[in-house]
Length: 368
Image (tube, rainbow, N blue to C red):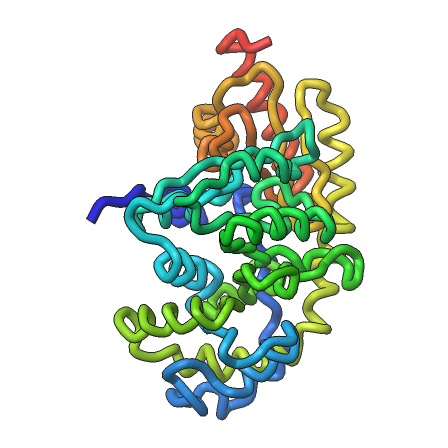
């Protein structure tokens, strides 16, 4: 089997528990258990249905997305849902259009299925919004799927619903599916551009989970909402690789889903309190440009005149004890993804260290 290793995930796993100021993460910190109302019976090693999902979780998703049970596929996080979607739709010789900069898992999944990934640029000068006309020019008879994220990872740009709808329509005209990973979407204020892509067309697949906004990565509770012909294929795949879902995750997810109205504002408040700290630092650096995030807990920035940031990230970690993600992992040398979920004192210190590392690195490498 030939595939492209998911190098970013290997990097993320290796540094997650490293010493230093951790500014490489993109997810919310886990909520306290008492906020979720977990009960002793939730820890039973059985659930109402271990095979394809607890009906109570399925019902919640059906109501949330206004879809039928035949459209719901539960999976191990949004990563698991993305895998099932790629494997259900793509095969050798197919083409899949993937946004760039974009989450590197999508390129690995394309290679794993034997499909060819074709980049669709999301350019800084266009506020990281893909051009529908450019997309139309990339589609051909071998194109099976377009892959997007909303909020966009890594820039945290929100896709205006009308813009997203236009992309869906371009693909629909050629019989192309649109996979929209919405794992960051709930970082937006409810009702302020947080419309799901599901329902924008019959050719839409949506994936998400309780990880990035809600801090519940440990549950590995994710899902795909898709046309029935796609979910049926996903079920066939799940029968091969995953005989049953984790009962504890199913039981605890019931409580978590009921708690989302209390949890969602926590992430938004964290963004609104910490982003001004980051913005003030960014605006003090004339050598840095950045994308203003619509929400989330990361900022996407470029150091002007710097052609790569992998070595900078290494210097920052080894000499300054601070951890960030170099843009090379998102097809963007010269950029950095910097997280700001940590408490304010550590955040200010981390940004100060980043600034000193950039200055030192530029002085030694003659970057203008």
